[in-house]
Length: 335
Ligand code: 3IO
Image (cartoon, rainbow, N blue to C red; front, side):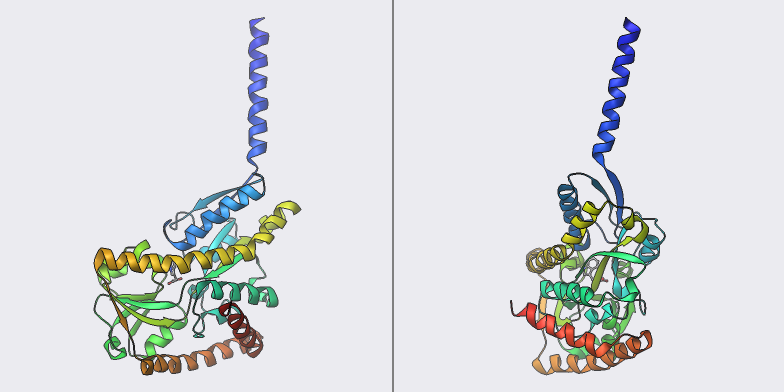
């Protein structure tokens, strides 16, 4: 009798375990390079929550912020080979790899992250560029317009001469034109470079003042409205193909909404971050003259020409892409 009871209890326990694991669904991993507090990871957690809810738990997302699974530079390859199922890439870290979508990194003076992120999403949907053929794109978004954050004040463009500033992508070119010393590296390597004095500041969006505590080391902020950095969230192609149709539909439906959510979050967070930095560290915000802004725009032109050349080599119709980009930008910035 006792034996039968034990066997019964055991089989019941096993049944429960099997049911629980069936309910838990499929687990997919999602790698990200910057720390958990930063906006690419905040959007990752929001995406995880929405996906788990909307698939009724059929998909279980295991997130890895802070380069714990893949770093900034091996993210693309790591997703292609399946070291992670999903990964977040900053397009500016892969020069020459994404000619079409690099359009979003051009100096077109986006005024909001929401507009830039939706523009990026629409551009991707229209062109479905070859450069992403090996992966599934889940969503896209951008950073906010880029500003200078520095240890020493940059009150005029002349103050930039010889100054080592961390950046990536097209902004490096603009810095060169200004006589500054652009140093290319991913955001995840920037805290150490600032600490060691390898760079004297950086060019990125103001969210990092708070999320990396850069306001402490960079007490001077200069409004430049330089380009945004484009990001893509990509999934391993085979892993994507293995998902059930209803799960794929949930993920596809979330792509544009997620781009917009992230844009709105960051637009709001930029203000929070700057206010926090003013209160906590009394950071100073410097404004340039209209003539200096005109100078910045002029320095952007050769880089558009470079981008067009890169596109021509890759068989991308740059003029058509730029025309659409400006059209989407005008549409979303007027909303
Ligand atoms: C960025 C990248 C990682 C974490 C927070 C961030 N805020 C703005 C950016 C954009 C940027 O500078 C970059 O290198 O992608």
